[in-house]
Image (cartoon, rainbow, N blue to C red; front, side, top):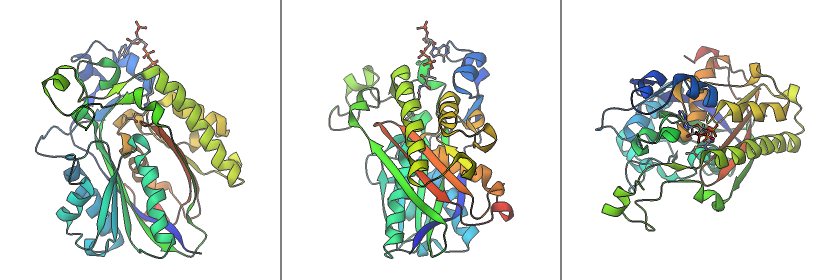
Length: 334
Ligand code: ACO
């Protein structure tokens, strides 16, 4: 049986740091409120308006190629999970491929908000498993600060910019993407969205005046759905694969809120030492959080480690992916 293995991971973050203290000068908030409610201390912001999402993705994808010693021309397919594409069309995936010289690849953007990366690796893995492709790149990246209302303290403190990418390649070993469970419920679209700029509300003076080109979130309602659904789907993937808490090496949870992560880990019966976390440094980078976690923890990952990767996001979208790590990360990593 051919499986899709993650054979390399890379990330990229803008240099500018925006701390909670900096935000205290912009909106009526405090460092203490943000840390207690979310776990976030600082986030990155791409201040250079000449740089769009594809520009921030390019260094990560080139780093992947360098790590595996491959040319961008060898990439068959590039999927980009993002809700902050460079523009409505062409797809950011196409723009990344053009910038790196991935002349033989096709690709598309995948709009699943914070679940974009797990939807992406699940989709990409199918092209590997059928034998159709040998090299699939999955990018998860967002420049959330470009769609934030800096007068709305309940959203502007949560998000940040950045993301990363993984390379999927075929393997016949007992490693790689072993299983996934994915869900979506469009009824959640009223609780978390960016309404302006599409065919429902094309850009106009009204959409700008009514702040419809910004993230809108009903925090408490999203929180309740997120904490329940992420815990349930993580327990579900464990049950389907006969995984007990002691079998799991790492939980890799979307970084939306430390309290949601703690709730998920509790339901799975695993302690904080097995939970990848970096929300305190980067905030919620939407589709970017999971590749950034894998990149940050790569050095600690060993072949055969059992990872449960879980996410919940706008849509609503949510799911879990069971991955057996395919290589020794100690020679790479940061
Ligand atoms: N600083 C100080 N006070 C604030 C701030 C702030 N930054 N933001 C809100 N408050 C106030 C509110 O006005 C409210 O005040 P009130 O009681 O006087 O009315 C009070 O704090 C409590 O507000 P809540 O919204 O109830 O705060 P909550 O504890 O729910 O935390 C948060 C808000 C962090 C947004 C939380 O609801 C959350 O994490 N939600 C889920 C986020 C998520 O998972 N999103 C999905 C992924 S994102 C994506 O897909 C794009």
